[in-house]
Amino acid sequence: MKQIINGKKYNICAGANLRNENLTGANLVSANLSGADLAGANLSGANLHGVELNGANLTDANLTDANLAMAFLVRANLRRANLLSANLSGANLSGADLRDANLSGASLEGANLTRANLTRANLSGASLEGSNLCCADLNGANLSWTKLSGANLTDADLRDANFTDANLAMAFLVRANLRRANLLSANLSGANLSGADLRDANLLNADLSGAGLLDANLTNAELTDANLSGADLPYTNLTNANLANAEMSQANLRGANLSGANLTRANFFGANLLAANLRGANLEGAGLLDANLLAANLRGANLEGVLLEGTDLTKADLTKADLTKADLTKADLTDANLSNANLAGATMPDGTINP
Image (cartoon, rainbow, N blue to C red; front, top):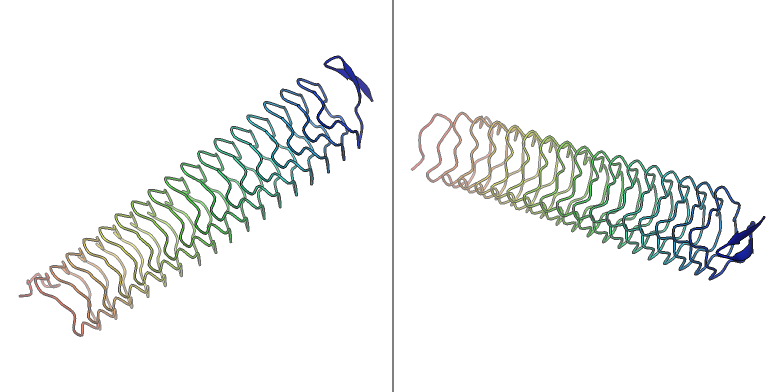
């Protein structure tokens, strides 16, 4: 198909050579440019709605403000392409190469990005609500302030990615690799992070309320001031994690590993810590009112000044635990092991204060 664009005639067809051409503002709705060479081309402001660009070469192309809604870009090469504020809603980018691409402020709602390579891509402020990023590679990508609510990031590689202030509410991050990811103040409420790798991740002030973290690995994770109220964390690994001032009320931590964790001033009101491992954890100033610590391992834990009123500590192991000035009013210590525990100044279940 012959078409005049900006005063020059072009052959618009599959496999066309449009390398470095000026196609600004071009109207190429539903055109077939599969396999075309558009490397370095200027397509800023172009209307590419529904265009077929499967396997096309768009390396270093300028697609600023371009309309690529419902476009087909399967296995297209968009490496270092500039897609600033581009509209890619509903586009098919499965297997596409978007390494180092600029997608800041782009619209990608409902887009298909399965197995796409977005290593080091800039997606700051982009909208990816309801998009499919299953098995995508976002290693080192910038996703700060990005909208990802309801997005599918199952098995995605998100190592070292920046999610500062991103909205991941109700997102699917099953088995996602988030090692060393920055999730500062991110919204992960209701997200599914089952089996996710969050080792050394930064979740400072993040919202994980109601999130699912079954079998997730949060070893050495930073969770200071994080909100995990009502979160589901059975058998989660939180070894040496920092949960200072964290909100853990009504959280399910059955069988979780919190050994060596910093839990100072954390609130565990009504939390389920059945058979949890808290060996050597620091719980100084924490609140465990009405928590379930049945058969929990608290050997050598620091529980100084902890509120344990009404807490179930049946069969709990408190060997060598520091319970100085702890409040155990109405706590259930049936068959608990208190060998060599320090109870100086502690308020006992019957209300008496230990000398």
